[in-house]
Structures are given as C-alpha cells and as structure tokens.
Figure (cartoon, rainbow, N blue to C red):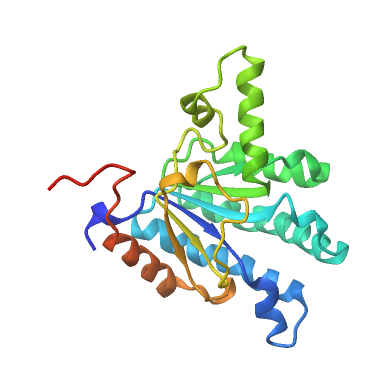
Length: 231
C-alpha cells in the first residue's frame, strides 16, 4: 500500500473481551486478560505499518459502574501491562502517553503510570496513547476549564490545543471492534472528520490481519473534510 495511505494516527475502541470469554464458557476477566495480550500484538503491527500514534480506549470513565470484581481485575491488568511492556516499548523507542483522569486510581497504579510516561517521554519511534478513566465529554469540559482559567475566549482552535491529544493531533482512522456501531464517548471532538471502521470481530480475535484490513479500507477512502470536491 502507498505509504501516503497509511493513517498517521489510529484510535481503537477495543470492545468484546467479555463476550469473547463468555462464548467460551469463561468469565469476563479471562477475556480482559486475552484482550490485554492482544494490545502488544496490535501495537507492534501498527508501528511496523508506519502508524505514528496509536490511541487505545482501555478503560472508560463509565466503566466504574461494572461489577467490583471485574473492575479489580481491570486495575490489576493495567498494573501488569504498564510494568510488563515498559521495557519492550523502551527498546522499540515507543513513547507512552495517557489521556484521562488517573487521580481516581490507587496511588500505586498512579505511580506505575507516571513512571511509564516519564521514562519514555524522549522516545520518538511512535506514540502509544492509552485512554484510562477517559471520556470524551469529560475531556472537552477539562479543555474548556483550562481555557477559562487562563481568562481566554473559548474557540475551536484553543479547545483543540487543550485536549489530551493536542500535541499529536486528531485520529485519521477510528476502529471499533465487537460489532457495535457507536463511538461510546471516545474522542468525540477529535473524531469529527475521522474515518470510521466497524467490525464484528471481538477484540481478542482482532489480529494483525484484521488491522491490515482496516488500514487497507482506509486507503480506499477519499477524505474531503467537508470541502466540495473539485472537478
């Protein structure tokens, strides 16, 4: 595929872990563990294909409403992920960033996240941006409050400049796995002109070939950003 057709920034709503596990007679936590393992595979594939920024929706600000046992497992998996894959991401020169309010997490998890972000901040081989305790509406409110605190007038431009993703821009392509046809409070502002790709494949089964399919589909799209196409 022409390199110009590779999306610079991909966002993924990783949906379907629980259903994947239940279809195999397992509990939902098993699905989350398999889904976490898939993050490594897809991250490696995305950067190999030439993607510059990969934004993953890992834990929504609405996910706190789930059963406590499931939330506890998700928190444990977050701790494990940041600790386990940090060295690998360092070797591959990948920078870790986080979008969302991590103050809701335990002090231990906050420190693990902060260490991962700080120790990779000079890496320039790609950005792995992880949405944890993240919601797009909350992000917009966060950006507007930052603007008002500075005594500035709210504009489209300075909202964009105060979002979590300000330094690496808007996603060219947003993928949602698991068969649902909605964005579920993910990057609503940034995704105004993103290409959307929905697949029935559940996240643990969304392998490198499935990512390639999404990138290939993106390559066939013609993006006009609201402009009238010139004849």
